[in-house]
Length: 462
Image (cartoon, rainbow, N blue to C red; front, side, top):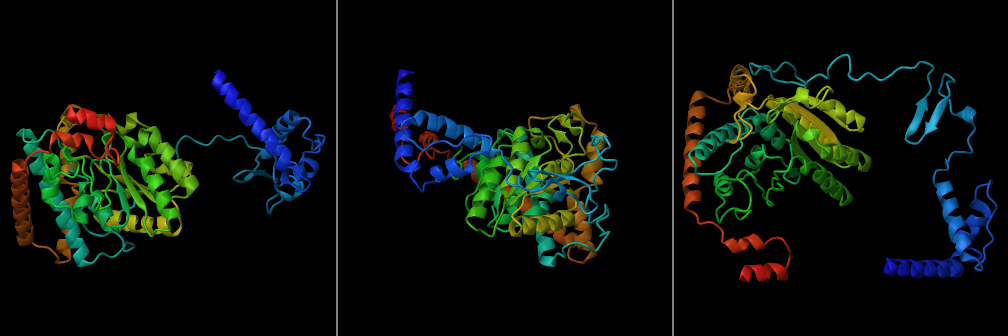
């Protein structure tokens, strides 16, 4: 405490001397402010060095007073009126109209926010107002979604056989993964949760690289220090998955602001579930993004369940989309099982985010057709009939297949060939990954500091 007080006194003396020497000169800012800028209710201070303590105290008081002084105080009240002559309140952030009617804003709108959709359940477009997709892109989207589905099935079985310790599937949410990835640029930085491997697949991450990570072998980019499905790839601008819920959301905003400051023609995209929207990080991130006008796209996979917690137990608002407006973020609700709707919405969101320097919130309505993870049995908290309805009748992969088949871009023969090839490739990748040795235990000390830390060196030698 004595040391702190001593330092404080020295700092105070330094400030006093600087104010006396350079702060109160004849033409200084301080001198002009003291004589001309102080509030009329306060007597001007004499610029003297004889009593510097009084100068500091009074200066701080006057600065605090002016900080909240309206810059438009000179305007006449009569001028703050709308076109009809009604008086307005010139409040920070914009003018506010007065009303004599006491009316509370309702807790929910009379009508729920609509959901943007292109393909109906039969895979047929119900409108023409969507981004036209070429045959090449459409077939690649479908092939990637199918690959993800097959990969999930085999890796899930591998975990059940005890070959890997953990796994999370994306069953029922393939369209959100792949269609959003197709609408982005490789320069856009991805901040995923743990149900977005389809983005990596689209960007060229191989099935062997997926297997290496899940088995934590020497070829794993994380060197075996992460749980399975915690993918990451610097080459693909895909930030490593973190188990902690929603930490990626504010990180994406900070990265987006950096891209904006550097003048990059890119944005960041962060994915999270409805459970992630119930965290403080979500709210802080939306406000941060809106205020800083960061080019970031928030994609919420509202699949109805945060593990075993239904959305009805998480919030009373109309889902997640309405939360954007409260923070000044442009938002849209999209059918997350409709690949064309997701593609169109993300294309538009990316353009607005980059050209207008603004955040965009997309709530994608979908359903987690599988268990939360291999540690979960969702039949314990939701009816099996409901799961089967979404898995069969509302499957996003089947819906897109019906559309490309109606365009004569796909056939049953192509389907069988692709499924067979992907299954063989995944099984081969697993066998290879199992044979690769594990990383040396010394790797646990690397990639933390840019140079070896003395403590780590001593422990490693021990």
